[in-house]
Picture (cartoon, each protein chain N blue to C red):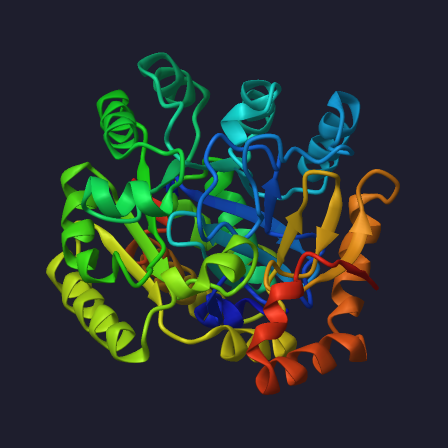
Length: 83
Length: 328
């Protein structure tokens, strides 16, 4: 998985932003989501991202993994990420 | 913040997000020169032949500004004018911005889109080239784009398509081309555009002098937007048809509450709050971009800005003075 061609990511104090420059739409990300996008940028396999994020953030690991997977699906459905 | 919030990770969606919490602009719209080979009836910037500002940024200043934009992580730039392709450093600037990873849009009148230029823009990796095509007929286009030639511009757009450069089309409505909107959208699609942009033509710049030839009646605007809604549905999934139906006042009132993360840079390095207001919040010849960004955010709260917008509601003609810059 990688960010789509026209999507730019920038880190911010609150987490980050994804800017889809074709539609000029901006999506704000909380710190967890920004961490997920960093993993994508680092070329980490999609099936490993959820586990890695769950290890790094406090909370119920299973819930975090489910939410990360949901977020990854969301990125793909919005055209922000692609295979 | 807990991972449990990842599910709400994408928690806001807006066109060029509100600027408040961002560490830098997301978008810099840079009018790189006021020089233009056309002298359009409605030009907001009053550009034209011989209209280059005497104090436009020199080479050192241009690349110093670009370097700051890249260093601060500005992800998206546009170069416009005037006609940006008349700028002697145009391709060097494109190469620099694209080479540093920014996404770059060129806003051009289309006159200089030779096969060689189009191939170069493709190879440098521009995100898109936006061409102004105000009409589906040579008669309408040549009337508004004084010194412009419809056939040359259409041929230029075809060369962009042949080179594989993403194309956007911009359309400014006037009383003599408003009826061509449907055909213009069809033409844009036929020329390979992926986006089509339009909105109300502003009463400012050259349009003030030519308003009696340009002004679109409200009834005609109603029909114009009806056609656009139908065309947006017709081309859904093939070409995006964007149109701003709200007037300037509504847009400015919204921006007062939610300033966009967008800086407008003039050819001489002055930075405006927004194109439709006369307020200047910085000067890239002497201020760092970081300082300008901080000032930009506070400048929107300056009472003179809200006052200007209020006065605009009583006197829409105030837009005629947008070029009398007010330094905040």
